[in-house]
Amino acid sequence: MKITEIKQLKNGRYGLFSLEGYLFSLDEETYVLCGVKTGDELLEDELESLKEQAADKKVRDKAFMLLSYRDHSKQELKKKLLRTTDEETAEAAAEKMQQLGLINDEKYAKTFALELIMRRNFGNIRAIYELTKRGINREDAKAVVESIEDDPLARAERYLSKKFSRGILNEQTRKRAAAALSRDGFGWEEINKALKNYGMENYDAD
Image (cartoon, rainbow, N blue to C red; front, side):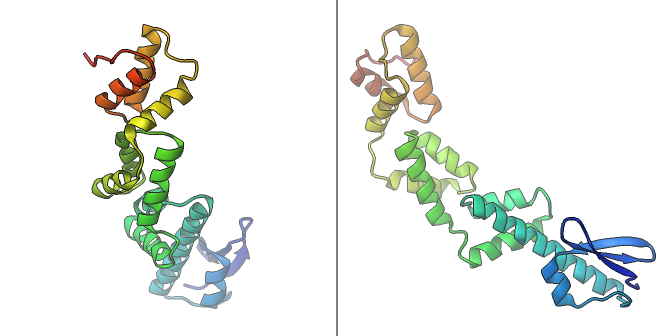
């Protein structure tokens, strides 16, 4: 197929055209490296290879952009890339980010677990759930959460002092406090003890 025109598009990419019209676009790096020029005759497999290179580069650029905003686990990044590409391309891009050292699931899990536990005061159940949502497998999430040296009961009490700073003065507030603790990942034993230590009778789960 003959390339009849190469035109820079508004988005900065380079559009390739034939007599049949627009074919596809290339990023600047791929365009410069491939050396294609107006008037070149390209075989179908050459065009397809060029198109795949451009698609791969576009996905990698998106991966770089996502990682520039915040850290991701490998699976979380791949899931986001799958919104605009296929499984193989998303996996390859995520693998490349890992090879470059931009993704480290172990380091990410530890950092995020500390954020959930020490700053947000989540219970272990909620912390594990949030890690699995971000692509960390459950066994690893459980191990990293349990490795953090922080007493869940003390954390539940910190949670109450922050969320219910005016105290728990009546039955309605007590129920709201118990529900909030449960929702954010504390077990009933921790809830009971935390409420008692915060100046209330044991909360009865029944």
